[in-house]
Length: 382
Image 1 (tube, one colour):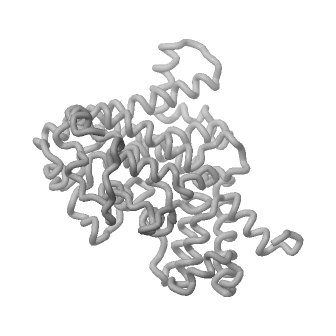
Image 2: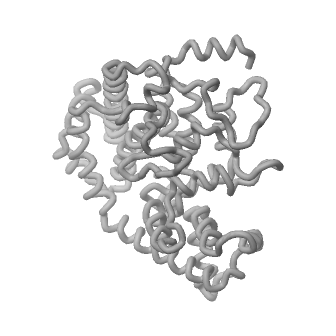
């Protein structure tokens, strides 16, 4: 990519967007690529990583064998990237940076969703704990082995910051010296965080209805859903229930994204934002929904919490997942020689607990279930 092409691309950006020329760079210096900018290279490194491929069999709410239709961490990450790019384009932000952060943000997730993370965090309480944002940083900084000159993927500071400061209802931004808490992240990071919320709320609705864990009739009591349904029926009339469900969720995603764009533009104008430094010096985030939409969403989020995430089938699977992880962890700690050879080698230079934690955290749902059987079932081949 020559200087003229770079300038043409940057002319499309708002003055407060994150540009390559302002990047804090990589931990290890590299020669610039001839036609890909630094955030494109970061995105490509994430997509080609082993951790990214494993997301195909790491679940959101449903375990992989419950059906091929349901979202996994991989499809969720792609959906977050798609929503985030749309918002970033409308706000004239750096779409390449947004996409790189979005595709990387879930790399550190354990098998079995948040139940797996909670189990590992409890098991690691006396040994540094476990947090999937930290684990994602470990993956991109240390655990991926693809280059002869350094460990990890050597991503740019801004993508790594987006990982460390990823913050939603389920995710807590990290407090690390390298990424000071009093410095606001880029607008690109903020966009990914909200796109993550939009994606999992609406796609969990889709999966919940399809699985019949959610009763669509009960959703009639949720004003946000009801008004969306009425709008869809007014536009399209009577239709196949499956198509209607898709159209309602499509309507909700569009409404949330549109409101976010409009309110964020108002916030940026109100605060007089003109540079990336203006963004970083803010005391609060600028990428937000309007107060009306925040209030409208609350009953829907409460409905999902009470009727999907706390559904007895989901709770049962979460409890089983915790037992699987606890028993495997105990076996590996007591007999680290039962670990695969490449992980045994790491014991020479790393803490035993962290090696075991890294090994389990990297597993897909399928790998964890199979490994559990091998370790505990006398009739299973090891």
